[in-house]
Length: 326
Image (cartoon, rainbow, N blue to C red; front, side, top):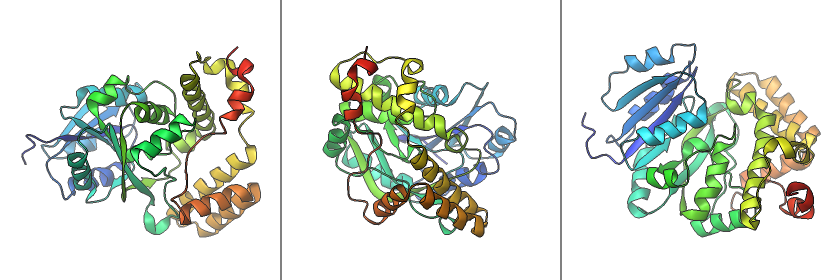
């Protein structure tokens, strides 16, 4: 199958991705669009992911093994190794809907000067999960306004397509553990246009081995640090290292809301494993932990057109400037 003159590469970072990897790869090989490349970088690991990828006989697939270097390094290597103008993200445990790449190609043709595209995403598998990924919606101008107001965009990382040159011009992914995507989104929104493809094109899987599941509190803390970096940029202040202000940020994390969020995550993992009684129990625990958070998530699911963003009120930083920027 010819791959000449294609404009997109699907970047697939892989590390201990079995047993989900074959379904992820098959979802790409089954796309209605055919003229694209797949770049799989196997970042170390101890399972049979590399052996499986090497067994796939398709000229569109290029496999690069490396010693374990971490996600940010791997994503930046993908940007450098990509031989096309656009890099489409996909995780090794997620699934692309059949028309995903065709719809992205249409969007790129309509807005060729964009910096980034993203789509809506549903939790996967859809018949054993509830809800959609909490996603910011709006025009490029509205997304920029959200960032300029001091909030972070909520975008499903495996749903994005990045302009390679523009992303590299921003410095690529910075090595901010478990939050490198949110850090890239605000920098992209301030410099280039980000367009939403308002369709569900990706299935996002909750599983116990994912980064979000294994490092959820760290991800929460680092997300606040990313917001601090954004606010620092907006007001022209030099940010302090995370080690210096971690206690200030930890004080802003609501234990009850964090617990409610975790129970909702467990709800979908239990549903995927057909543990329905445990799923109901997780839903109840989420409500008991923070009724307000659960009602907010239900409202966002039913009425997604309102402002959806991540972070605390920027006023928290402004009221304690002498602490955050001594």
